[in-house]
Image 1 (tube, rainbow, N blue to C red):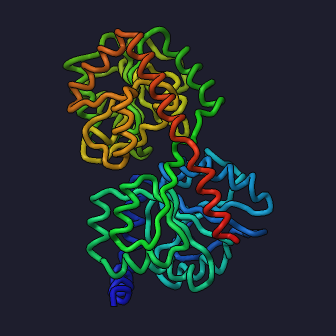
Image 2 (image 1 turned 120 degrees about the horizontal axis):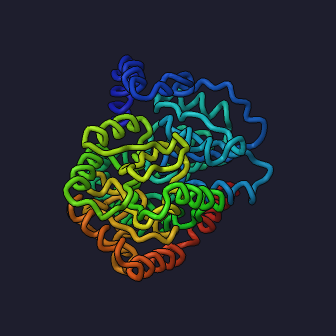
Image 3 (image 1 turned 90 degrees about the horizontal axis):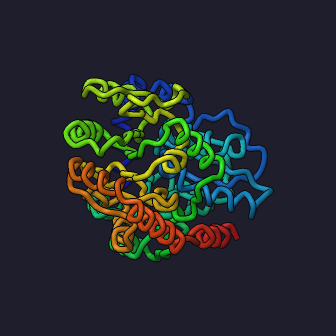
Amino acid sequence: MARFFYNLALLLLLPYVGLHLLLRSRRQPEYLRHVGERFGGYDIDPGQALIWLHAVSVGETRAAQPLVSALKARYPGHRILLTHMTPTGRQASVELFGDGVLRAYLPYDYPFAVRRFLAHFRPAVGVIMETELWPNLVQACKAQGIPLLLANARLSEKSARRYARFPNLTRRVLRDLAGIAAQTEQDAARLAALGAPEVAVLGNVKFDILPPPEQLARGEELRRRIGLRPVLLAASTREGEEALLFDALAKRPPGEALLVVVPRHPQRFDEVAALAVKAGFVVQRRSEDAQIAPQTQVLLGDSMGEMFAYYASCDVAFVGGSLLEYGSQNLIEACAAGRPVLIGRSTYNFAQAAGEALACGAARQVGSAEELMEAAAMLLRDNDARGRMGQAGKAFAARHRGATEKTLALISRAMR
């Protein structure tokens, strides 16, 4: 009955799907491209055996990077298919993998659409990165004998409560998966409480992402363009946070530091630039590809696929999504790059990683944008403190590596 009502709700929502895509396209025109794929229609020729990974958006796509490399090395006779739900996720896969993978949108969870998807690509195995459970997709994979795994799974208390509203449906979906690999013991416990029969704790593959040499070189070049000024990076900021940062920067500027702001979502680049100008700051854009003028106060990081370059060019990194209730973005990359990390109070998406980074001295927590500017100013004056935090971050990231190999072993067992 739960599945019946789920499919009934999908059917009732069908007339609104086109409207949803149209509204999203007002900010991101790419939402009107490849619309047929969202209903299981594809013109991609698989060509050979496939291993399929689903990475809903940018974060999951970047997390999949070490796993994609490992799969290509282990299974040279298979192609990798990456599916996404957002245009930014799809674009991230272009920048990370180029023509080395196939890419498409995963269809909406209509029975006819997921059957068309599976019939077209016929994957040897499927891997859903992090946590995105689609009942009809999971059931269709089981019916067709395609092992479907949930890998690098994380489940916050908030998400667990949402899934718990539909206990029978959630339990059935979890039991129909061929395997589940959680990031932490806490994630595993929440999945088990929802009905998952067996959950392996394999760690977080994001720790296996190393700063690419070409990104480090870009960061050095960007730093040369900035000059001798100290640099405070605000990475992956979310809506509402930039206004807080600009207000705090006007009240308590951290010395002569340049503030580099990299919004999480590219459709907000123009909006954030306008906010900075309205706040009275001299603004430049990374996309101008120019020398940073001495009078520039805010540099807008309006480029994709350069996060490690931004980390390499900064002195102190604030990780966005943590000043407001977004649960924080990924602080692991900043630690791996050896940069002192500042985070806000909202860290539920990376609760364990944030807690350990704070405990080992790789990160410091702030309660407001004003506290952030004060902490940044203090660190920018203290070379030794920055050095200690940077080394602690590198050691913290190194201690947790190895999840990719364990996940690869889980995939190999499922394929056998």
